[in-house]
Image (tube, rainbow, N blue to C red; front, side, top):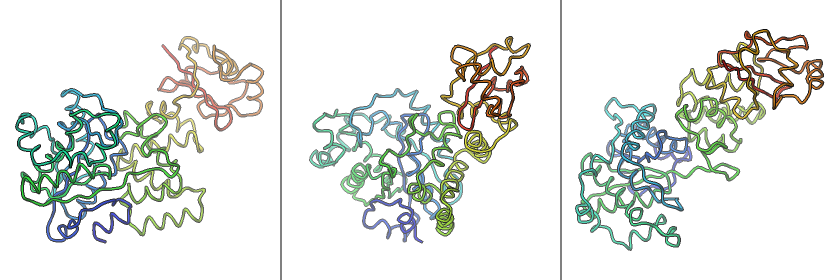
Length: 425
């Protein structure tokens, strides 16, 4: 398949400017995608434009990631109902550095079509307002700018002059990269089409040249909810913001309809391999072959094999068979991530010095796991209570040896009910 055919098959093509495919057949083409530096991590919503760059490079062309040190100070109004808060330069620079390191995981920065990262602050920092309105603003009419959806959708609620000029700022990025580096294509989400074609228009009017555009569709979930959001907000690529376990869980919990699309969009698995996974899933939906293949592939590429193994082990604690050894092997951050929101109580290490009856551990404290000593004894007689994944009886005395390196003791009744005892010094 050609690159465009592959993007179509993978569900990554929404719009393409006429002549783009013909250009790619004639020469190695440089294309760029812009990233917004409003946070110190990219999130999985950014994976779509990242995958555009990945496929661009795999097809032999040259990818460029633009991190918006300048545009981040303005704020893109596309898809927004209100103006954003500005970030200061120090925060933006920190965010840019973090995002650049993440982008380097996906793209090859060596070879004939080596990827590069550019920052538009480099060419805007010395440009004065008068320079901008004289050299850029005079080439694009107000009527043209008003016709963009990003402007029309905000006319009733209001839009500042700062946001109104955003499309000119992004358009100038394209012009600058076209003139200085020979970049001929800009890619992005379908909501960026208006901003991108402003750039192609500026190149035509100001530079007398020709440039092109490719956009990918905005990804939605089958149930209509927003892709890339969990109950806790964005699903981030930085595991300090979203643990590898939660990252893995987002993909493993995808609906069948979504998982089939996500395999094409977010993995580099080939067509035959994906269709084989889909066939296996159709034969035994309960095994969730599509979700497992998706979650493993994406988590491995973002976080690496070690974190994938940890995420799978962490998932086993709640949803599969696991042992005390498995529990103790988990890093503290992943353990806490697995049991986030689980009720807990606190005990001092001194209280455990002589050991504590498991009945007291289950039913004691201000907010006990079980409501009474009687309920605790009944559960113990049923054989439904575990301490750190090990079944225990009424004679169990819990001591300091039961405290894991994380300072936690994990109590469990049945398959799904958990309680944490946090030990303090």
